[in-house]
Length: 82
Image (spheres, helix red, strand yellow):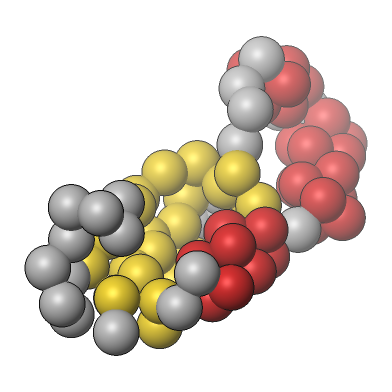
């Protein structure tokens, strides 16, 4: 991404993800306990990103990084170069 972004260019991602692995497990367990095991099973079929992993990666590469959780497991992120 760094190769094609202009100075102060942005990467914006909106996707299924969790803050960290413990939040992922907590959400799935809560879904199963609330009789929404079907949703938890669907989440098990996905490979959601973890906010903390993306934050670490983008910051290490010199991006300014931020994000907002929109729902229980949907986030929007913005990483700006420079």
